[in-house]
Amino acid sequence: METTEKRLPVSVYAESTPNPATMRFVTGRPLVPEGRLMEFTSPEEAEAVSPLAAKVFNLPFVTGVFISGNFITVTKNNSIDWDMVQIELREYIQEYLNTDGRVVLSDAPAQSLADANERAVSHSKPNTKDEEQIIAVLEEYVRPNVESDGGHIAFKSFKDGILAVSLRGSCSGCPSSMVTLKGGIENLMKQMVPGVREVVAEEL
Image 1: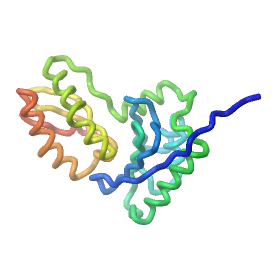
Image 2 (image 1 turned 90 degrees about the vertical axis):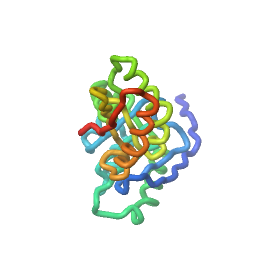
Image 3 (image 1 turned 60 degrees about the vertical axis):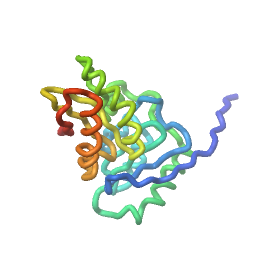
């Protein structure tokens, strides 16, 4: 006789982010293993990998889904205000997690998983001590704050004093993320890593 593991009910709460187009939905349990990041920009990308993301894309106003740790960040178009759909979307996600519950398909194609992670963007491989130090500073001081806003930041390149990073999730396309990049992250990097003159966001 087959037995099924009894799951504890999952609660979900919504948080606004600095990006008015995105909302962060935090769950009571991890959605993906530590370190895994997935970003989907279309229903087709989600279908092969994440039933949760595909479910969210069923809603006509959704344009992007970002999953990391215990949260899912949803990006919407301009056809509707969050005030009208925030509660319903939270309940929609919560109901799914308490019924079907699958976040990632067990037989998802390796390439599709890799593509989803690549869209979420991992750090580029460091080639110098300075680049190793940049990544260490991003990991310790910057990434936790960015993730708490439903976004992700990663090291891309460092050349001639210019540090390029990628911004994804709620940070992508967010007007205030540029202020944070210049006012906060750039100043921090200048203090912590000699040689950094400027921090820029890499164009996607």
